[in-house]
Image 1: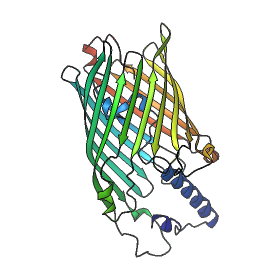
Image 2 (image 1 turned 90 degrees about the vertical axis):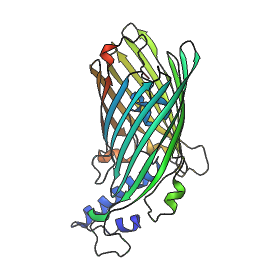
Image 3 (image 1 turned 45 degrees about the vertical axis):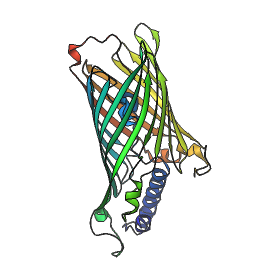
Image 4 (image 1 turned 120 degrees about the horizontal axis):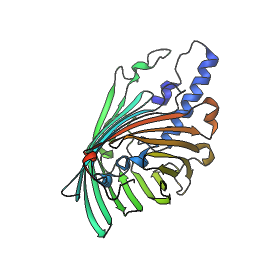
Length: 333
């Protein structure tokens, strides 16, 4: 129904209308074929976006908010707002967290609220394994009030419609002083509840994340953090990020990411995976010992780059009570 009514958009200039329609269809087809959960380029500074076992890892309480504007020259392009907070408890053995996400693409919107618990097990003198689980509510909505049509469609709802479902994520996260690895699965429950509700916008498939990285000291005041993130969702090519971040004087992060795809399973739809490549430039700066500000700029290396469809992402993170602690091993993962 959503795709059928996009084709009825009424524009004053027919040539502009055709061009706008093609861009919209391109944007939404790429969004559907890609992962359905919101994408962040700065997840390397906040693992709670991709793994509930990350809760409490930093030791200090940590609060972060992020805003991402993707494909900025497209009408109805994705816009994502997130808020996360987590703390360590029971002398570092447990972590508690909360997450809120609001993701809007065109006439569709999703809202997610989750509570997170993690438990950490010592696996060596300076290494830990965390097990985490998140539980909460997901809402998927469709609002046609902003759509202009040639004539009213009786199948189109006259106002915002939404469906809600319980949701759960789980994960494992291992780290030592200079290495980390994580594996997580999202959207583990709730799909059956959505199938009972008549709302076509409710995408709710399993998502899997695998991440590996570490820290290398290059000089006294320069460190390198290489990392890899692999993401998979049914029906979409498996996506991977190759990241390299440099840390200068334990205050300024500069680096970037290369994002591409690989076809592993037969049910993955798109064959020309080069059309999905992108790069991201990432920066984060500690303006205070307890506050960090981050920015990421994404650029598409595909057919969309001629339309200047870059993405921008801003984040602000605050540590709680960090100024009162002396941390022997700052946790940069």
